[in-house]
Image 1 (cartoon, rainbow, N blue to C red):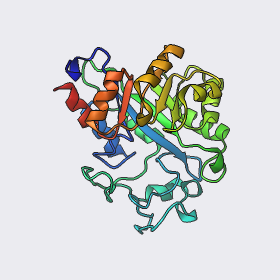
Image 2 (cartoon, helix red, strand yellow):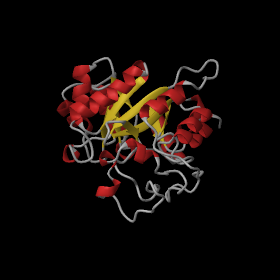
Image 3 (spheres, one colour):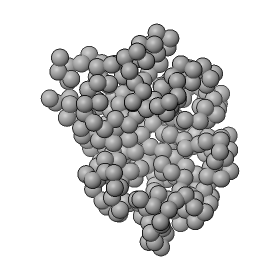
Image 4 (cartoon, rainbow, N blue to C red):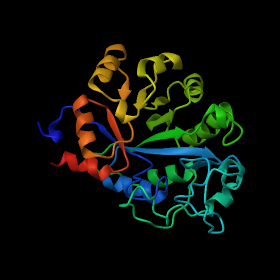
Length: 283
């Protein structure tokens, strides 16, 4: 059976926009992902010193891809002068994170780019007119939280979530947004405070699926495991215990792995290369 004729072809989630093709978590990456035709924009958020919700994977300046506010190169990170939680957004905005191509993504097109605010990303993407017949774009927003980093790289969960929810609700995209997190504390708060908002429990490869869901204390909308942990047996067990739970593994960059996951019936695939996924639909 050709991949394109699979009865449950999964959603396409653009990881950090389209990290394999444009600078991650930047406006160029998100807008290019929309042009390609992704279903869901995946992004990460952190908090600045002045409580702005910033789109960034790390809560610090990644020396592999970012320059400092004066254009300086950092040898290592994290360090006190790279901690975004200790920097006002006006300073963060001056740091270029697009001209230094990520060493792991040789196809990435370099261009000047900064870490945008979440509200800026939502405004820019909502302004894009979707082609006739395509549903409105959806968002997967990962909150970068961990107990060890409370009050060091980010606020405590209650304050962190409050800032993020304010932006989501102000932009009126809550019905099309899923909050992702590895930190169960954040997801429990979402479930308590805004139960209609979709949630995704992210898991590393060594974390057991069913036990992690039980520990969370409620059934999230989606399970987001490392794709290397997705096996036929694991999927069968998940479907048997949680029939309505969506399965969207990360981060799947090789077409051979995409084909395997599609055959296993996943609900979505998160990838740095949306173009590789889309090529499968036309073969």
